[in-house]
Image (cartoon, helix red, strand yellow):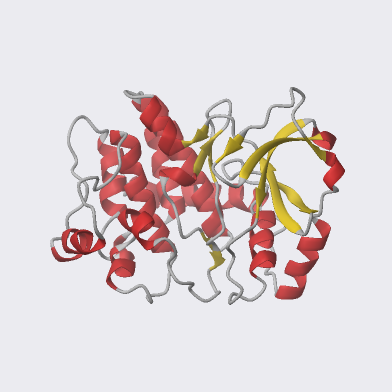
Length: 307
């Protein structure tokens, strides 16, 4: 299958599609990032409560509101816990969201709102919530659905990488589903431009099961696109089996032994489409250089889904 996607015409088509979406991409310095923060401001009186007055929350920080100019429900999320040691962290966070806002498989960013000295991100509301919860609540999903979702996530990740943006936390918890079950990548709080310095891994125990072997071995290893690809491959396993990867492993030391020393991955059992399995295996290779790029995966996943 991956021999087929070496076809230059396929790559050219993908690249042109990405270029069309990302026509306005530029390289942002801190001054331009600050401009984004200023220009993206939404007057707080445009973000109102839902018509029925009911407050809908997701987690501790996300509240469902109504954005009057576009007449749509939106997610209002406070920007918190962005370390002050990272220069212009809020500005960089917003500039990344702005740069990615036109991709159909990345959650749409509408702007920021300042209210009571707190900064909020206003973004698209995904009615069906996160993929992790959806997989738990809907056992026995069809392969048609799983292949569609894998294509959409691959599309979003390919767009991120085309923009030289590394997500840093690709897992089912950070994939949102819209009302019509379109998958969109979300939660860019840890994301960085590829040229920026690597930041310390946050919530290590929480994300360790999706973390690439090179980062498990040494947290100071620079984060790369190949790290995102590894995480995506583990997410594909989640999607295939509808359960947590390495769910029997309770501590990081055991995970390191399994992944690094024994070079084991989550078990592959049952009836998995061969192309899907191949993408997973290549993506979680212990050797970063052997992992396919995001656009290669997107092309392959699209072919598999269309069969």
